[in-house]
Image: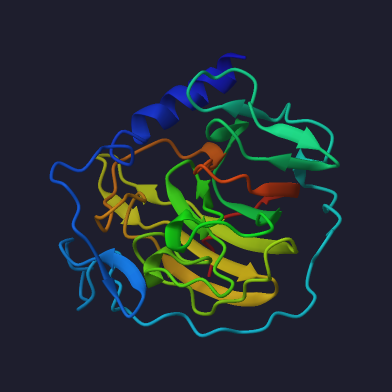
Length: 275
């Protein structure tokens, strides 16, 4: 129990930047039917603003069949097997997760959840399903997210025939790097994420030695290729790094939409530094 709440406390401290509210009122604009912002900072070494509606959309790729109902490997930690959410905690209280479990799936509700166990470098398998029939548009349609270490997000959104700012699309490192492709299935169909995440490394004085990186397949289509995070995920800013523990909980976001999840497991990835 101490380990659970220690991890939650570390994450709460690290999330301070991510959960900060913007000082000025956002000025949302719509360009070619895509809502977004151009009063935000420019992405580093880029001509695009954070959440820029003018940024090109990821190309649509029709996915094949890949890793659905994948059986966990022998060394995997199963985080959800369709039975209960005992491996998860409510982010705000540290108590039991408030999501509902029905018909072998967990449905997001009432708040974010995070794992009782802390993780660093991991392989993640997760399956999700967007609500059907769809409701809303842009960022209001089937919004959720996977936050590695509770800080670094790969987006979940219903982007099937639904355009949004490119760095907020499914498969994107939210607010930073758009997905390489839009491989979304129709709402009501199950989708799969298979991800390789490497945690950031910090020096003895808190300096960043190497950034967090993600390789991600969405429905078998590469949507991130060893892409570096620019820092902790945030809204309307590129993100920056703040030193934190080498292991922190995995977090699933509730963003006012009932997104369903099943078959979630992780396994550690050894960090090999030998040539």
